[in-house]
Image (cartoon, rainbow, N blue to C red; front, side):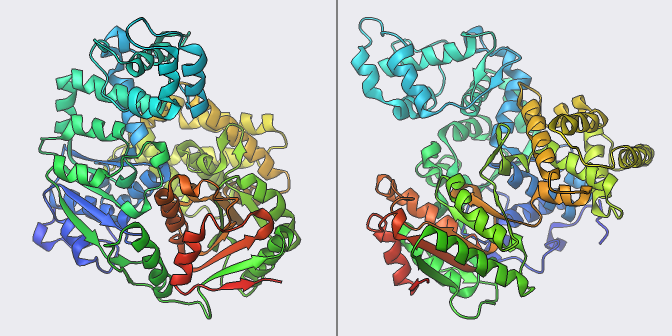
Amino acid sequence: MTLSSRRIRPEDWQPVGVRSLEANALEVVRSHENRSVIAGPGAGKTELLAQRAAYLLQTGASSSPRRILAISFKRDAASNLATRVRKRCHPDHASRLDSMTFDAFAKSLVDRFGQSLPEYWRPRPDYEMTSYYERDYKDFLYQEVGLPPAGIGTRADLRAIGPKTFERVYLLGQLLPINTWSCPSVGQWAADRFWQSSLHGGAKSVLSFPMIGRLAEFLLRLNPMAQEALRLTYSHLFMDEFQDTTQVQYDLVSTIFRGTSTVITAVGDNKQQIMRWAMAMDDPFSEFDADFDAERTSLYNNYRSSPDLVRIQHVLAQALDAKAVAPISQTVGTIIGESCSIFDFPSPQKEARGLAASIASNIAAGKLTPRDFVLLVRQKAGDYAELLQPAFGAQGLSLRNEAGVIGTIMLQELLVEDVSILMVSLLRLAMTPRAGRYWSECQSEMAALRGVASDDEIGHAKLSRELDAYAIWLGENRSIPPTTTQAARALLDEILNFIGLEHLKSRHQTYAQGEWLEKVIDSAATHLYTSSIQCGDWISTLDTYEGVNAIPLMTIHKSKGLEYHTVIFIGLDDGAWWSFSNDEIEATAGFFVAFTRAKQRVVFTYCATRGDRTKIATLYNLLREAGVQITEAI
């Protein structure tokens, strides 16, 4: 299919790359006003945004030089949307979509305009990124902050706040004051001390991503010209997974776009809100509808799961929203027998052997691959992996804990890092006899890094020659996978030199400040070496690096946005769900998310040795209500 750069009349535009869209989805795609879209699992949220981008760009509803800003929560989601738009639009159109994470967007603002902040709130240019946890706030309140001044509060008042309230209400829950709080409460006084310690207390400023978001909102509030520049740049804004929006993120968007001509589309599912522990707002959709005068639209089709799974999903959905409308499955069921089961195993060892044998049998039948399966756990994936891996290995299966840490980065996060993806593509190009898609992927990304325009034929020809020569050199001179971590790091440094460090930092803002890029390269080198240990050639090494033939093991939270033929949830017991009663709504939402990753089959396992099932009786009752049976496994 040849993609044209010519403008299409709105009345002549048709969805690109799909047979059709649900009527409500097509209405949103063609809309010219703010919309909130409630789209359940498998409804095609990313496809909706990709089609909307295609419509706006191809019809001129978003006309050059204005652009579309798409903000997602996960890097792979942002990358996925950009990829879909590139497949549906001519490069001249697709290049006007900026798809990034909330964190990357906020960081790019601070990196560009942060030095215009008042000195009191100004981070040093070479600031470092960190993550703060509950224990950090507890240590600060109980040991580090000191005594409040007379008239503000006492040590007991400080400790009464608690670390969670300190973070959510005082440190990040409020707009930053222009100077400081004039008559601070004890919580505001402590928050101010924390900010000043982070900004000015060491050789470098040390900030978390939520703090970066607060600074981004603050600098735009103080800088009307920067606000106006963003409003003139972006005709449309997309916000994905909107149910997990935090107050920090919502305030940033409000400061920039509220009351402007920029048209906003917020998409998500309030039944999949599983980030309230990470400061997600209670009901961002209602606030958005009121603040931005948005019209709400619901999508009802499910393009992922079989009719039987969709029926069970609806029972779970009604526990989260009594008014939930039953979705309509657009997928044919292929499972003979039960599509959802609970298996009671006498021991974790027999559970491991039983699951491994069952998966091996399915793969041997020739219809499924290892990547068609996923093993999900609530938490502590490493503990489960330790027991499961020997049983899977005995069946000739590779089980990979994608929640494991490589170097300093979780494996699942490493694999979606832009620099990791590009380096693997370059190695595939050099080491694969038939490079296929890796040539176009490398050329496209390198052109973007070097700023080669789509219509620059001379620039593309020069880049092609350079890329071809480098791939040949790499294949001839680095034909054997690295045999040490140091050799792997040296190889990646060579590739990074070819890519161009400054080009990389310019295109990907998360690599421009601090030590994140260095951590990614170190982790990638470690993973490349460990992947090569059992492999004698580059193809199997890179397959191992990417997990091509491995069955993934991950937590519920990391499965969001993914889909598999068969989902196996290990540990439907009180031990894994010990905190269920603390926030039953969010826990049930997490259960719903796990269930809805499946296309055709869901299997739950239980072992009495790990805990009872009285605390999570609610979940079992929902499954029984949906007709799911418990089977004693031998």
